[in-house]
Picture (cartoon, helix red, strand yellow):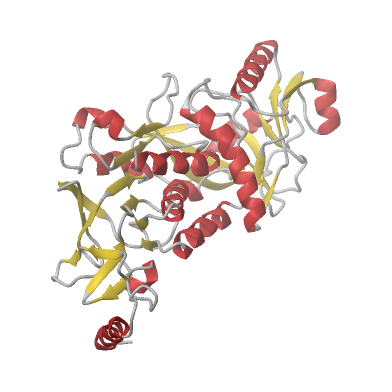
Length: 430
């Protein structure tokens, strides 16, 4: 239908009686979306209808009373936030610099549904991981997303590690993690005959998931509730505009967009974007520390049926056994502190992997590990420094209405995504 046809149809609806009854849009107001060439359009999309917008009288129209929300970043957390906002009735656009969803941190992890036993009581990681575990298992079941509650063993191979194991158990109980059970080495070996340990902590609620299918489901929910993703649309600047925000885009449909709220879920780019927000205090932008995590695949058939984790190490949870839904077994990630993004796995790191894995699986044969893939985690602390919590900077922290910055959202970000999203969206209307 052409623009003239649209206007004619709307005029006929107004003449023929009640506008709302006939599908006209009395509950909508104009949203200002302006391209660099002066034309009104939605960045990164081929049609305004693709994002649930309605065109009438040459304007793009949105529901009165709904917030106009821009989420920057279409990784798993950004998608979850965008979905939650759209489900809540807001008008949502997710701006993604890449040409597809989840091309960064979200596609380079272990795809584990964590249970939440590691994190300090009262922390965002503890709260959102424990609640997110329940939400994610339920969401996967309701959407038919491939996942499996395979369980996990955290193993101790020395008396010192056993003390750590008991501390993790106490922390997990304090966090409300269900089903945790300390077992001795004999019981652990009965569960996993290839395992060598003196004790273990069994977590039955830990699982694995097809992360990409999860993200596709989030995208589907977003779009079915009228939201959209603008791909190849990097955000360049954000400035106050009245009570809302004016966002400048680069990319194939460069231009500006005025919205009520912005959620910065840009992952490794979150700090860079925060520095481009007019009026945002520079001292509130935390430093970004890059921790590369390498994975090696096992060339034989899997020898474990559960995830096997050592006790945690500086910067991570240790080189552990991960399983995928296709039946493959791999090991990782390790922690390699780096200065700039790098996605090449150094095959020479295999020697360190063999040594670490053989502490709990002495039967690992030489020549059975091959480089697989790696990811880069957006940490807020470096080597030898204590890990810190997720940093969710909303208006109550920085004083700017309608703005949320997400920093340091690494593991357990995938597990926590649905829970984080609910809290973030609820905070937008407070």
